[in-house]
Amino acid sequence: MAEKNVNYTFVKGDPTVSPLLLLHGQGGNENDLLPIGKYLSPNSPMLSIRGRIQEEGMNRYFRHSENGGFDLANLEQETTWLFSVLNELCQKFNIDYNRFIVVGYSNGANVAARALLTRRDTFHTGIFFHPMALSTVDSQQDLSDVKVWMSHGDKDPIVPAQNFKVLATYLKERGADVTIFRHDQSHNLNEAELANAKSWLADSGRLQDWQRR
Image (cartoon, rainbow, N blue to C red; front, side, top):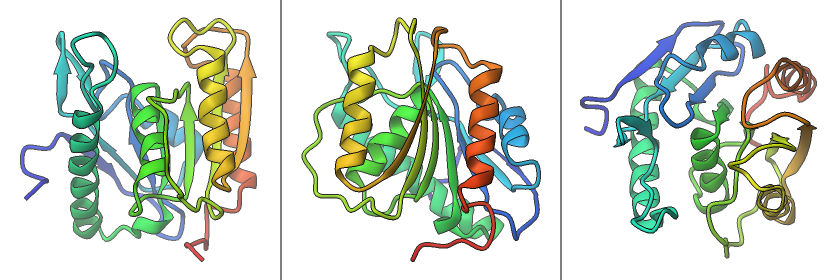
């Protein structure tokens, strides 16, 4: 089973409220985003899964290549593993997979955004803090039932503004409803973007009584 030896945390919540899937940034773990999830939607059940890749002692969801880029073969492999674990845990905790709101930061946001663009068995609502496009994408995904909120810092040394724009364009071209929040800080999370994400989620119509059309 894919779930074997998986590091994860599940927090019970109101089953009538959409669950949150929390995906940490590089070097994080399954507990890092729990306070943020609680802030965004206090009553949601929360599932957080740790990436199983380690680079220089830091947890990640996929590897870098030897030249410093992204190992796309490993990305595909690890994303398949992540979704296998996710499906098993949904059955274990009786979670409606289609209602997940994915909250990802940095590395976790990257794997979530990539999954939206490349996988059929994906999700329909996302909050991505500081995501980036990992490569060019040639797909015909229909994201017309997808809503995404994304943030970017003008002084971010990791995610170039042009790269962030490319990711947003990929999502929009495939029909996703994309909301962008920009701020003048770096790659860090800040109060302004958290408050904006919380407000967006409350107004999104995805927290209660929603399922894929």
